[in-house]
Image (cartoon, rainbow, N blue to C red; front, side, top):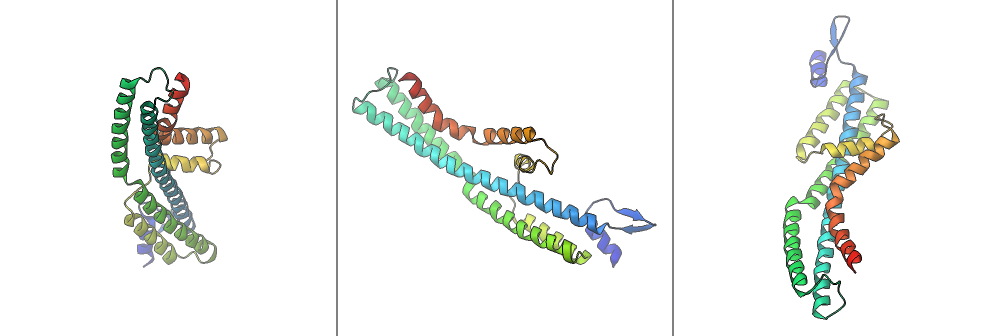
Length: 219
């Protein structure tokens, strides 16, 4: 009956007492459900993008480090010009250390499964987007209790199907991307984005840029 529907829709949210009857503010619940799906899909799109970026940067870093090792080895064996600090012993030491580093990085990155997880998160976000669009259509046409319950059940089903959840940093980036809706300033938005990209990708850029910078300084 209606009272059971009210408790189903409340989902641990406070219920409103109106004229002595327990009632659910249907429009408010629809808005809360819409906001919840909007935030979740946006955050999961961000995490999917982050994982895919890490997968690409990881492959690029390993390839470039391998190129560094080959370049140093070939340059040393062909008596090509090298910086003064790169004598035979130093070259041997660097190639061994870089080779071990490449092996460790390859094993570590492959164990994280960024590509597969990123694809699953992308599929989840796409399903949530379709559900979000359906909910928006329901809100402007026929916002009934039954339909809202169905949308909420479908949301819970999608969330439970994908066990990979978004991280707080992905939600923070989502807030920065929609800073006006979250009442953030443009400066706060840029600060959050800067912190996000620096914390997530600094290792890969360091592996790519630092060796070149060292060679440029000492040549």
